[in-house]
Image (cartoon, rainbow, N blue to C red; front, side, top):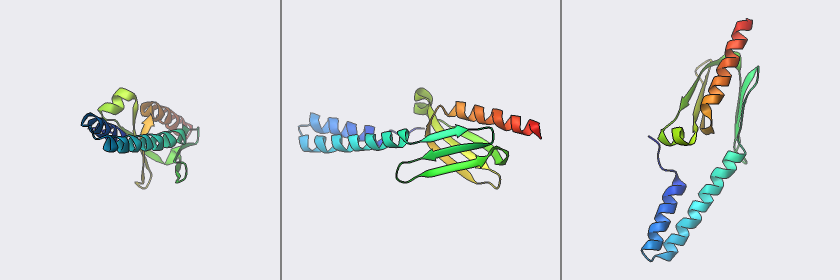
Length: 130
């Protein structure tokens, strides 16, 4: 099951703080929620994923960069994990398993089923060429 995002929890605590006349706590948690939202936005806007006719590519992060580049012929499986919120809002975690058992996780990917479908189509096309 999906957990509530940290920013939502901060926002709920801020609302409770303002409702109970504890404005300093409310302000603190509003700032924390905004910082968490900004961090998520930066990660989202600097993430890149793609499938070419030869490889699967993934890059996540701005300052600290995590990237994956794996040949289609070396991909064993592509799994998609989606919780309730992921199904509603169209995001999920992609797990790419390469030959040798290496697993790469990319959390909170927009339209993960489309990425998996496209990758599987290209993998099938590459295998048909052999």
